Length: 91
Image: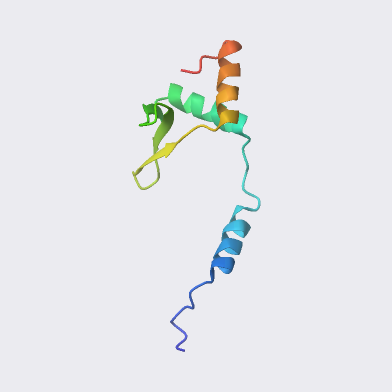
């Protein structure tokens, strides 16, 4: 095989590469992520959009300009409710 051709990684090798790339990366709790997105909403960097199932999600632009949708988890919704009860508006 010529040196300039790369072998395609197996699924296991690709998964290991993804796992290794996340080592050392900051991991946010659902509460921290909800809080961060709440402030991003306030700055106009993300917005809430309605979904077909009657729920909602945050819409944001990625580095390539594509719109990405992030649906809050139950833990994130609990954190948002708590922020609202504590006087930090969730919306």
